[in-house]
Length: 153
Image 1 (spheres, rainbow, N blue to C red):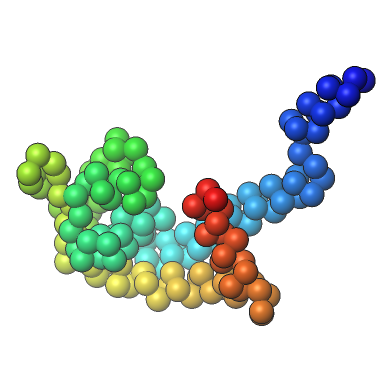
Image 2 (tube, rainbow, N blue to C red; image 1 turned 180 degrees about the vertical axis):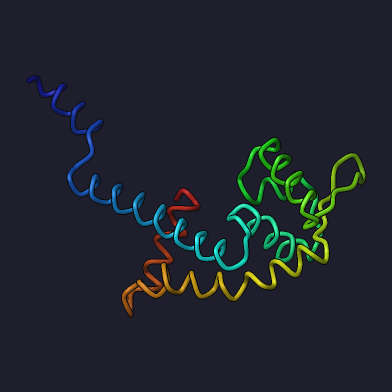
């Protein structure tokens, strides 16, 4: 094989450490998300998407957010959020109204009751399936690395 071919191979193929990192990352993120969602769903009936919408309405918007801001905060396409909100409206968890050329999403009393019931379950599940599994003394370094990855730096 030529030197150019060898260099190209090194640049396009993952090293064994990179493969190990990729597999650990994908497995850990998928498993922890699923377990947390399963715990919350089993205890409250909320899906991960329901929880995500309701928690953002409470934390980011004090109960109300513009629909496009909510979509951006969840990194969702507008149509995905629209379908999710339609289902949540049917269950009485949110309401939508027109305001200033856009839609505003507001949590209802039923939605607030649902997120209030889910919060302690979610906290326990996060501790059980994520934060409680990070070795003592490594928490800050772990979170710093995740934040750097999320920021794309």
